[in-house]
Each structure stands twice: as structure tokens, then as C-alpha cells.
Image 1 (tube, rainbow, N blue to C red):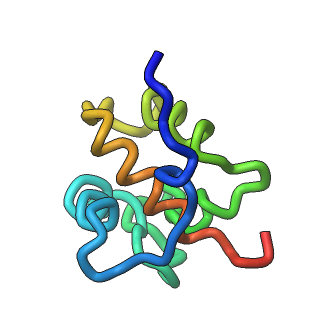
Image 2: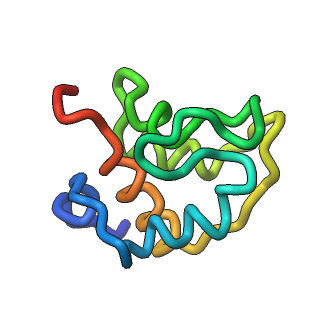
Length: 99
């Protein structure tokens, strides 16, 4: 088992060159609203990333698991571990500071 440093999964401020944001924009934005402040997704069945991030109890392990689970209305995407880590980290940056 390979341990992931806690700092690698800790939310941080998004930047213009954030690899998770770039991946989300290229791989997820067709269905999901992926940017901060976007609340309505192109696909009405796909929750915004901000909504996902602010789901009570949302955590890096929960997001990781979700990305590797089948969803009825979501295509099965194949992500490398580094891509999953980047997207999970990006989504966590969208959590409200109060949560």
C-alpha cells in the first residue's frame, strides 16, 4: 500500500494553471459546472463541482471512491491516479471556508 501524504490531499487555493482545474475543464465540463461560482451544469442531472465539494461529509477519500464508482448517468471514465488526485484536490478547493 502506498501512502499519500496528507498535504497532497489538503484543499488549497485554485490557480489559473491548476492541473485539476485544467483536467476538470477538459474532461468534465461537458456535463458538470466545474468552476467556482458556477451552479448550473450543462447537464441538468450532473451536479456542479461546487455542490459536490460542499456535500456534507465530503472528503478526499469519498471523492476518490466516487470517481472510481459507476454512476447511472455518468460515463465510465478512466483516470490515472495522478489525474484522480489532481481532480479531487481541485474539487476540494471549491469547499466553502465555513465548512
